[in-house]
Image 1 (cartoon, rainbow, N blue to C red):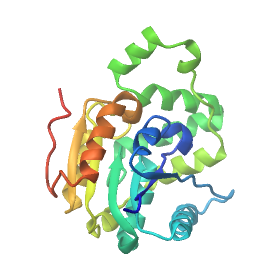
Image 2 (cartoon, one colour):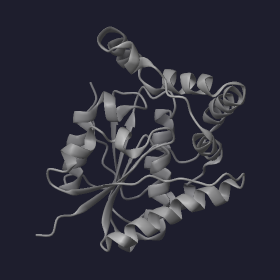
Image 3 (cartoon, one colour):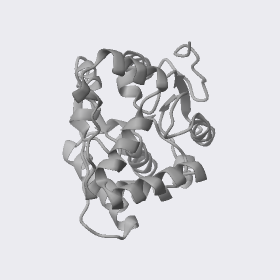
Length: 251
């Protein structure tokens, strides 16, 4: 039997090897796993930047020469969603973690604050992202168990700034309505960056989706790695149906 391929697409502020450091080796036991990173040129045309990300994904999957499973996290969920809507014959399944349908006013306010802080001092924007990345429970755990270095936020660069600008304006409503492949949505109930209501809105738009909420913040790939992997592995085995609300990962 030919080994199936999973393409992992990271979010706004972390490269794929870091974002999926825990998930990738688990998936590699049964699948070929490809990390996909995307970049942009220094330009202010945000539509062109976003289209460039999608084109890079199209090229990467074409080079693989076979249909793939797509797993997108945060901004990567939007990139994966758009690809699956427009190139469904090349997609076996779609998984979206920490994703949302369209940026609401609360998210937009946070992105605008991030951009203001970045223009003053990029390090401050990094601190804001780091503060909101984890659930309160997990932050307490980090403070008690991890070293100070693990708690130090990364300083964002211009590439990340362009991605935040894109996040501020995202609307994937049209593409979400066009999804035909089996889809899994994973969301954190304590996510301070993407509200659980935004995840429900995405669930209500994708007719082929099953939805698995988890007790986590936006960094659910760290906070709930075992649950994310178990849920995704079950999904790949066909154990969830379209429209299914998966309650087993909640307290």
